[in-house]
Length: 128
Image: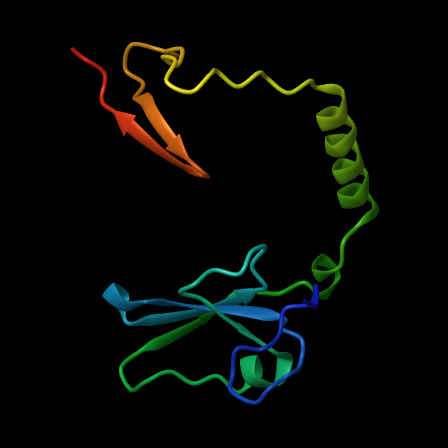
């Protein structure tokens, strides 16, 4: 899979530079810089499609200013990533409790984890 996100428009393979989001309650289309993560209800657009964007009649298009220099990773981003990886390598993993063992509670108002299957957890509300 390519690390470059592509334009969401059909048959367009150009790299995305902007993200389009709709605010249906306000009849507004918001076009801004490329989002950090691809979201299911947002559309990534290339430069050509983002410039030609139009909205339905009665809708407003809000175009947020895009800084071309901010789309490229900086040295600070790379250094922060390297620091995070080093920190994660130094921290020992916490031991997993045996299956069926009660899990430790964190606070009186926190939900209690009852069971786990893969990445899913079953939570129970704490007793009053």
